[in-house]
Length: 258
Image (cartoon, rainbow, N blue to C red; front, side, top):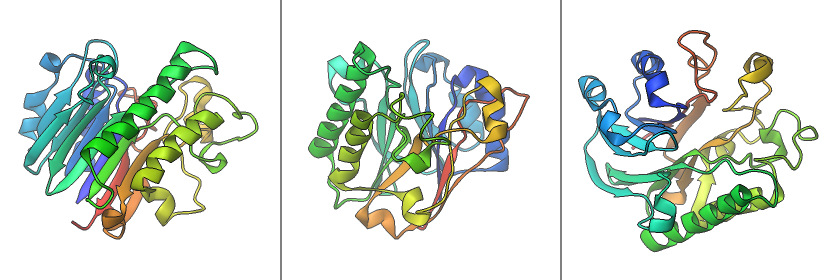
């Protein structure tokens, strides 16, 4: 089974490229972030034509997440069930084949001390509470998505240039570590402890061609899933394109034996 996470940076702008990629890489479960479009405008029929059923939690212009699956979706949770945080559509969870998949689009944040910086930290606290209230690390749970934090210096192209910038600040890394400490394993780093691989590159300055990026998109698994992960890789094909214009992220694919 192939499971992918992909921040498309607008489903409308990326629809053609997304379906070109799915023809090349027909994953079984696709978790999409940053839809930037209301649910009523989501291309459900296009996905259905390709064998996917989709669950969507979205809003106009910003954020938005979806889980599309070729397998039956057994149960769905949209958001945290918290009015304060669910104004921004950033989390959707679905039980598929007995496994809970939690698709997360974490806030980007901003410079230390700003409102967006503190909101990002509060979001991570709320995510941790959501995990504690609804799941168990003894269950098969996969949390994946754009977490907007580079865990370690190996996850950025230049630790000195990027030190203490958005995505590398100590407080952000500690917030993500608390999610891992709940009971998750970073599947990519588990399989490839020393591999340098990024998932996001700024559009400016041809960063993708220089491979000057950050690893901020993840597939995290609980202990019961750990040994069912066969591979994790980043597909550069949809990122290294000039037309249709790519997202600034590349999809991350996990291969599971479920």
